[in-house]
Image (tube, rainbow, N blue to C red; front, top):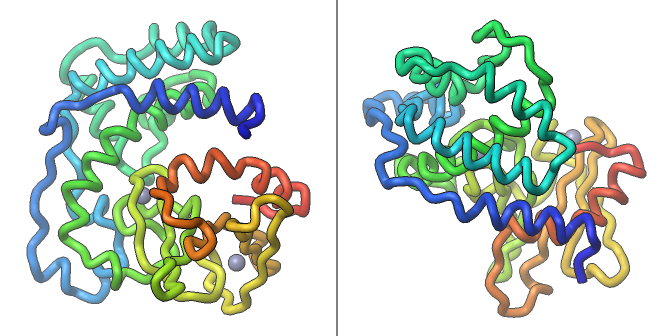
Amino acid sequence: MLSNVQQSLADFYSDLNKISLPEDAIKYSEPLQKVLTSEKEQAMPLIKLCPPRVNATEFFRVLQQVAGIIREKHPEMGNELSIIEAALPIEKVEQELFAAQAFVPDINLLTSQKLDLPPETFGFLLNHTIKPFIVQYAQKVTQLRDLDQWLHGNCPVCGSRPTFSLLDKEDGKRYLYCGLCEVKWRFQRLGCPFCLNSESQFFTAEGMEKYRVYFCDHCHGYIKTLDERKAGGEEIDLFWEDIKTVPLDILAIKEGYCK
Ligand SMILES: [Zn+2]
Ligand SMILES: [Zn+2]
């Protein structure tokens, strides 16, 4: 059973999931083989090695659709959305620059575009606009890397912190999951993915025995984990698992841990 908060999250995300992209919405240039095998670059997320190139017209089309969905599901954000929409670039060249910068991990678009806009609503709109493009990018570039060999605490595609993890039912191997790219990669069985401290502690919650929440007393990070061995044979979609387990986030945050 989902709570009201979870149900409205689920509705919001299923509307966003209906936004479709043409197959060529994102392109990238193949990195040189020697870049992929050099030790320094091996630890770098793909977004820095072969940055995505986005079709700006598609980007702004999706942005308008996302704004429409937010307006419908979160009417309280309507005013701020209108202010943001009125400030966005209209000229093609400017739109291209804006869309390109939206995919550079270290750029703050409000600063680089000299925009004085409500940062939270702007970030919310931007993140949900970027998501389908990053998912398509990830589908195209993950073949450049062996996700079973990555073994780092951050996402091999975009470099973000993992949002969820999975204990594999076959052999108990651990995988981390990026909620932005929807990519899953192998990680060591024990230890904190955020600060790499080797201790592992977890708690479980009554009625939710197939999940564990691993927490770290060094960096105060936590990560929700699905123990696939207890999940039966059902098909697993970690994106939805993340929403279904919101009560575990509440517990972890109450205990002083953060994502
Ligand atoms: Zn990612
Ligand atoms: Zn830690």
